[in-house]
Image 1: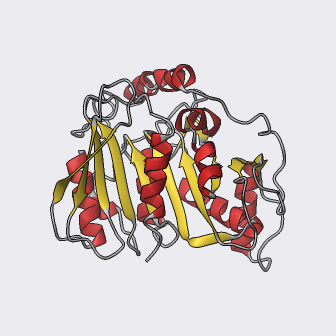
Image 2: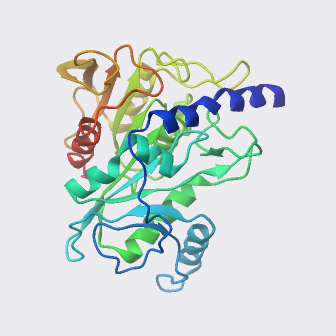
Length: 330
């Protein structure tokens, strides 16, 4: 299916271009700095493993090697206090974008400063066409079948941040867009012991629920425009002959089952104005009922919204952070 995969990759090219033209803001000019274990608050850096390990074990050494090979963007909130356990948010970009480009769109650095959470926004791996991707699942978006283990990479990022900062292990969160949203779901499946909650904008879980086997419950928020023509709200495939991804309804059902929720996905009557390109409060909230205490599975539908909504700031950051903050590990 090389021809189909080449077509898919080219179809995603406008994603990065749209982010570049539509993102209101840019990343910090300090991104070329080197992160250190005692960095002060309010700083941005390119973080990498410093060669140290916890006890010198092989697993820690492997983690350090991963982040040395693939440094990640990192922001320390202005009021960071090393004496206090601090939440960590990891943001994953869409296919063909980058951590810095997606940050210019999500603008979570300001949210980090306002709410005191550590913030990492790494880059995926370049494919044969030079576009960055996450090896999330069979539907999206490792079109070249490259042997990349992004679950291990994100786990190594968590280890690296924990080795340098006072991270609250019960409040590690992942947020992603498009390919990064698929990867967020993958991490909730495979790193459920470390991830408290995810937020996925325009993505889905495995189409085959048996491939998702969390060992711990993870709260899930999906945000998706029902007019998205790139990743379809009703499910589909990125191209003819490619493996399918499930609908939002199916994704919610999968996570309800994994998390032990026994009720239905129900409109909770709340609305938000997340997309400045659509008049009024266009986003409706639905919640799965009868979930275990402290666990939620939610779907926020942007009615008329596309693949790259014109995100309202600071409403977007405030809203997704409120969900994450409310869902630490039980």
